[in-house]
Image (cartoon, rainbow, N blue to C red; front, side, top):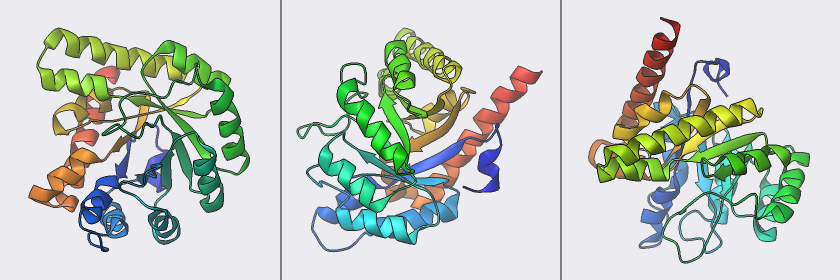
Length: 261
């Protein structure tokens, strides 16, 4: 991490490069290369790189993980299901962090948070094995107090709050639902921080929604992927990341200014 990342006021940006691999895999070959995307993201101001190695290898592949681990200057966050196969891969490659996520083969994208309360018998040992190997573990969960409480009990140092419902509410245009989901995120972030957890957030975040999430003071990292890769088609990856970075910084600075006024 850079020096800026240790400031309590600084909001980190993790860039998910999965869908660069999706485009590559559409016709095979090696172009576009997720490694190149990761390197461009670093130059544009990203603080970390996220990649989800799925069971069906629909985008990121095993070779991508090896290259990213060895050839980027940023911390690598490996999104992974709680399976013996994925645990073995993580323990072999030793990424900086591993984010445990739910995974169903038929889903288009991750549809909700990991049920750590219902799955604690598997999640707890997975956290311990990864932690013992020096990998920082985060749990991708819905903004639900019950899930947060169990995450803290199981010893996960980080939770990443699923922002999908909030972002969908914004796109749907229902102000009441939007406000409800935003308050739900704020309450969850406060509860997680009070429980001693580091708070991240991600899923579905766009230029239009990032400011609301960035203004939540307990959140110290956002992970954004699909929107940035899609926007890069029109403006370039460098430009998309720099604009997102600027919107994040402006929202965080504005929120802190209001708090200290």
